[in-house]
Amino acid sequence: MKIAIGCDHVGYELKKRVIDHLTEKGHEVVDFGTNSTERTDYPIYGEKAANAVASGECDRGIVICGTGIGISISANKVKGIRCVVCSEPYSALLSRQHNDTNMLAFGSRVVGGDLALMIVDAWLSGEYEGGRHARRVQMISDIESKR
Ligand code: RB5
Image (cartoon, rainbow, N blue to C red; front, side, top):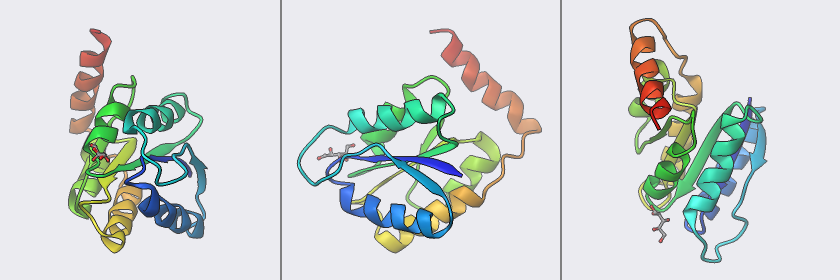
C-alpha cells in the first residue's frame, strides 16, 4: 500500500518509528512532514496527508500529534476523509470493518511506540465489510455533500 504520513513536532519521534515499521512491512510511505521537533501547527500536516488520500495519490493515511485529536479533526475537514483517532487496536480494526476509515490518527502523548505499532497493524489488517455498513457510510458522505 502507498501510505501518506504526517505529524506535528510532538508526533515527530513516533512518526519515524511508524515509517520504519511500514517500510519493513513492504509499504511505500510518502512523508508530508513535519521533519523535526521544532514547534509547528498540526493542521498543516493533517491537511497535506489528507489531500494525498482524498486525491488518490495515496491509498491510506496515518497522522500523529500529541493526542491525535487536532490532526484527526484537521484531516476530517478534507472531503472524502474518514479519519479515526485510536488509542487501542480494537477500535482501529472495527473502524476499517464498519466505517471504511481511510486515515488513522493517534497521539504520541497517549500511546507508547509498541502500542502505536499494534494499532497500525490492526488498522491495516481490517477489511471493510460493506453490507449493512455501506448505507451508514453513505449517510456520512451525504452530510458532507450538504456543505
Ligand atoms: C501541541 O502542543 C498539541 O496541542 C498537539 O500535538 C495536539 O495534541 C493537538 O491536538
